[in-house]
Image (cartoon, rainbow, N blue to C red; front, side):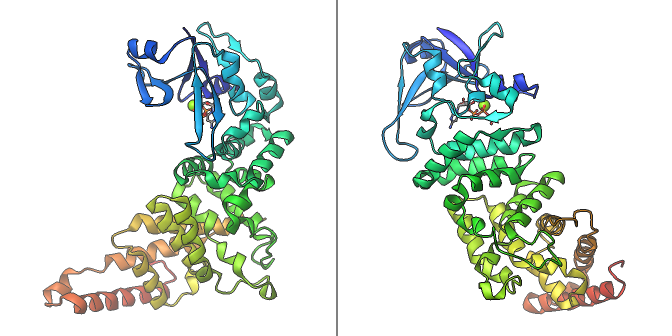
Length: 410
Ligand SMILES: Nc1ccn([C@@H]2O[C@H](COP(=O)(O)OP(=O)(O)OP(=O)(O)O)[C@@H](O)[C@H]2O)c(=O)n1
Ligand SMILES: [Mg+2]
């Protein structure tokens, strides 16, 4: 049997980037031989094994044919006769279809090195279409390598368009898709992920609520970029620049979905888009099976981002309602994430990226002030239950009024 390093490890070494994990392909071996050598099988009918010591993945060279729609609809054909070239040709991108032998020699039958030079993400063969997840993968690689000058080859974009238009993306399980989405949003250019999906019409299939924001105008006074979709891309760029975590990026992606429901007669105003957007955000959350923290933050940012932007004008009682709603007493971290998302929203506007956002510190100090109200004296007065709650609220309100009068510098 011959063992080759394949995929991302070869690509990233040639790019001079750190290699995080190795994938291996094994040619000329049977499953029985692998088991004899102590490799552990990953699944019953999946020709992939884990190395007994390193835990890295070793896949038998295989050809893959589609037997039905969606994931699960795969049949694998692995046999000792399958050659390295046959294995590589069914892979997604030429830059991912290179192998390296144990002497460091690169085997590159499909022009991976040429495309690395040309900064092109290009599919290897029509077998690309066997796995519709690759549409998301390519957009994710584009989001990762855009800063190095990579772009998706025109013919690959065309193939991605055919896959998207065939409805195949609907067959992807939310679990598989979410992994790609989450990784893509954390890449250096998450906006490129969305842009590529839009370019191949996959955004329309996957996230029509977001796709329809392109072409929807906003008031130029607050949004010099005008187009709502362009604004979302700019907000994502800010998220990457400020190294925001996934929940913040997810919330930013969805925060303005309500603007897609504004009747055209009201454009460029979007009165009540925050409330209107809630059910869209919830629907996307559920459809994508986003993790709980992402779901929660997205709904809260959707409903309350305008509150944050107007923080300095809010009445003390409205401010208190906001803090109560966020449960800043027990969930301080979630409120921080909310503030971060709103700041990214404020900065994701052409020419306003550097503008100060004093609302952030104002909200932070308001939360501190409300949190500082002590419960103990109220307990000592014998208050409990609903009465205690009301008294606590009243004291917090007083504290916030003083805070507001002092301009937030209390
Ligand atoms: N849907 C997929 C998934 C994987 N691969 C192939 O399997 C290799 C390893 O897959 P994976 O580890 O998911 O991707 P990497 O390319 O290693 O990239 P990453 O840096 O994201 O791990 C890829 O390079 C590619 O050759 C593929 O062709 N189609
Ligand atoms: Mg890998």
